[in-house]
Image (tube, rainbow, N blue to C red; front, side, top):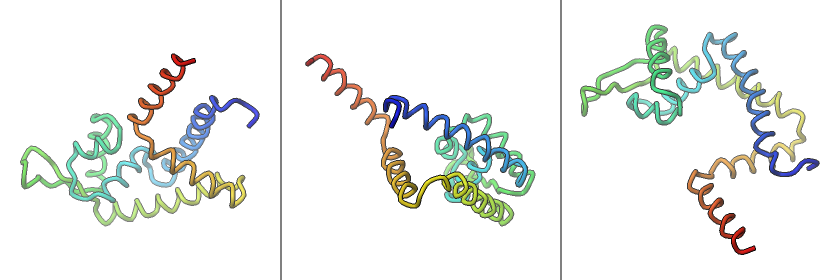
Length: 158
């Protein structure tokens, strides 16, 4: 690496921003949806009969954005809402056949876009990148807290 490792987050952020702009444009052009809306639909498709609150937590999107997207999904007949048998105040969500088809098409588009983006890497580099990224994605906020405490303790010992 030419720059210090402290720029890792900056590099990742730049890559993510560029990839999101490109992916968002593809989602709008091909599906008439924003990237986050596709992601939301994918969460529902992969986890049928979950509550709106559960979907909000899984998506890391604000409740208002999720509610707007869900209303639009219902109008476009991409999802169905049913009242929860355990709690009549809760709706359970699942995709319709049209929603499932859209998610499948979006997954194919995502795979194609990812392959194009990663085509600058050799096969070995891509495998290494995917392995490292998978390992980093397993980190939790608690891990970062532990790293910070260990760093402070080491600094005091110096």
